[in-house]
Image 1 (cartoon, rainbow, N blue to C red):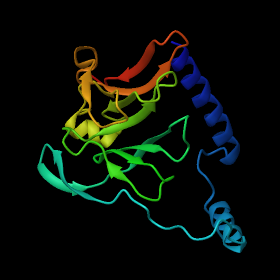
Image 2: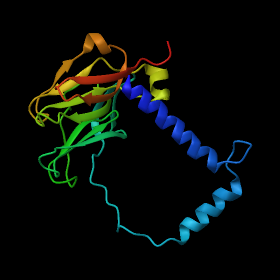
Image 3: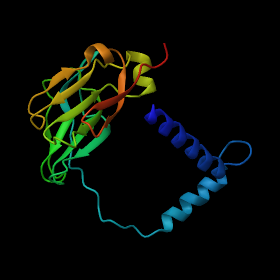
Image 4: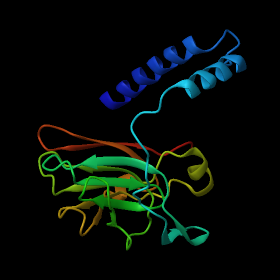
Length: 196
């Protein structure tokens, strides 16, 4: 697919850049790293102070070992093309969150959904009220221990107020790693079932 060709080209270019950073033994010299950190410490800080604006840990994340608190890492963000202050976040083991003030405050959209493991969030460019949240994620450690914990794609037609599971037969047990919207309205999905 076009996405796989792009991913292969991107990986090749990243490897070329990385090869310029390492010596012939394949390891980054320890002295180079220390010199880089020392140089970084001399730079003037820009951008002001960072403040946490959430999401914060929530109770009731359902995992195979039971119910645990957590918010997880951010796996994806999407911005409403009509209003840049409306932002959606896909959080691993934390669900889908929405901000209507540019990230100052957040509200969970999926507390009632199981599982809460989301790999990405997408806004339909032709219908921004429609959201797609991909289930599962490409995390080697998580998938090796528990599988991809995925069974389809969640879709909302009302800005995330309600969700329906779709594609459960096609994507059962696989992580949907990306969605692409074709000009004719078709939604294309890339998936990975891991090593079988």
